[in-house]
Image 1 (cartoon, rainbow, N blue to C red):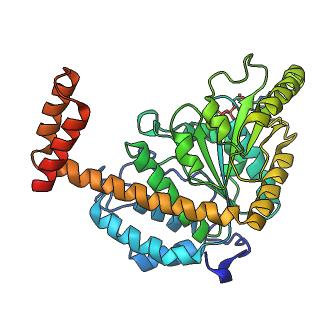
Image 2 (cartoon, rainbow, N blue to C red):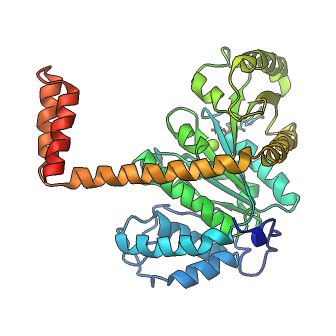
Length: 370
Ligand SMILES: Nc1nc2c(ncn2[C@@H]2O[C@H](COP(=O)(O)OP(=O)(O)O)[C@@H](O)[C@H]2O)c(=O)[nH]1
Ligand SMILES: [Mg+2]
């Protein structure tokens, strides 16, 4: 992040960027943004890298949406322009805080994001929301279905909502989300919220791209840890017990004390920071901005201790390594003969005729000789 762009004030809405609403992304409309896309819709001219870069930097919402679609595309020609765009935008990003939000379906994530997001735009922040939802290619994406719960935020000219990228593997989805975050920051969004469902591997991916990780839980659901893996609690910087309202309030308070006890024994997710349990009612707004105060306190603390920058650097390093691993895997699997040999050796392993290590060595030897 370049010094001169730090704390760039949020852009004021202009005639160009007040187009409100959720950006549809892969909303199933044919040929949205890219020419000759697989869906073969109306052909649009592929913009030059310069046009994307200028558009994103000027806060043009339409061009930001198109730039995201560009980086989401797997077509080699698009990827080439996308990398050029990203390289040009990288040093132009604003200082941001990236917050991951997880929790089981129904916990109130979308309702919370609506309340928090509108609260933050009211304070002059530019808020971008996206999601990592590997199932979205099948279901159409939970965050799309949530438009109804984010109506105010979706209509807010200071907010930008982008559904989860589709893209098959979780790794593919995560790559696109990471790059989307870079585009958001280049467009001046200083608060980035990344939603994910807390029921799989996706929360590990989201943890690896955010500064602060929030786990939202339901009160009064009996065993409070039900459905949430202990591992998810261990990567959280705060636990928020939502729906702390009405008849639920006593149960929520109870859950909070139970969590405080549990958290006491866990290693903190962030060095030097104590993960605590908090209460909120996303529908009434109670506790929502208090939760944000905790995020701000975290940002001040970790920036001061150096953990903030160290974590981002480490995340980048891990990302590079993951991309190299994926690339190597692609090269390996696309080598002629490897697929057949793999299938054959795996069968022998399954039948108990061959140790797995031997199968792997044979495959690697074959690859090296090829
Ligand atoms: N009583 C109460 N209901 C809530 C609260 N937050 C969300 N809900 C409701 O819980 C349901 C699921 O919320 P949603 O935000 O879609 O959950 P998500 O699946 O985690 O995104 C909706 O009917 C919300 O209106 C809250 O704080 N209190
Ligand atoms: Mg939701």
